[in-house]
Image (cartoon, rainbow, N blue to C red; front, side, top):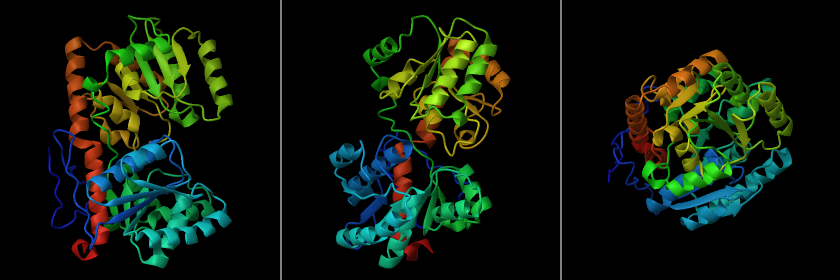
Length: 415
């Protein structure tokens, strides 16, 4: 088991920081520095399924395992049970609301929570609760950590001002170097306040050996996938910027009938867009080739039944969870050449990058991936798994987050 130790002086490099490598995906989390067992209060809108929510639960577990007390404030959701199961605590408040009156009331509510539970650090992950958390932390003198998860549309002055709260923490965590650059360029955030911590994969869950053949077969039957056809999957909620239309156009240009393609993701109320995709599939005569399926609860099995995983986002992904999850299971990945994917895909070694919105380039690259020899695919698979284990594990993400907490808990050491 790899022991990740606190460095004597914190690393303030953001763009060129060399990730600390873990060879086995496990870690002993650094203890939290405080006069007593440290209490960390994480705040987010809700605890339903999603990357931000999953990261919150994972960090909460790391806090508990490091000997601290983990408290999460949200409006509730499906992950509250899991949070309680790992020994963390949940407090329900309307932190999901963007109503200015509710946000103002949440300031006082959070002040009460901070005082009652003697929180040592407040960590917030979304804009609406960040406004409440900022003023609550100021009133109580508790250090504030903020994770900047996306680019957020800048729009007019008011929108930019609303977004700027995400840059007001004592430390600001960027989930990619791309986001760190965005913060500096758009909001002028000082380099010494930014910490780049890439999101991480749960290497126990996303492990080829941990996914049984029975799970894969069950999912293939549920999705009515015939044997003997290569499967190409684009996971992601059904929203235009995820590039589903580009993917369908690429499959049309590929002009192959011996493949099966999956769009895996919930429409989340975007029923008109789903109908548009279904119409596009039928118009191109791809009804037997392209299938749109809803949210999948067993993504490791979904990746394992897939031969190629595509991320065709037309706007830059702040990080891009799909790309690292697929690599961790040895799947070739094709992603668009912008945003976080440029940090997670090793070109021609673990996958390929194509120009955003370019259906021709995507079709050519899918064809290249389909024509890999058995040996080429094996080498690419091994390099993909190694890339994730060495650079993008959940334990690495959690350890670095705890080190940021220690920076603000012991500011004298961090100066």
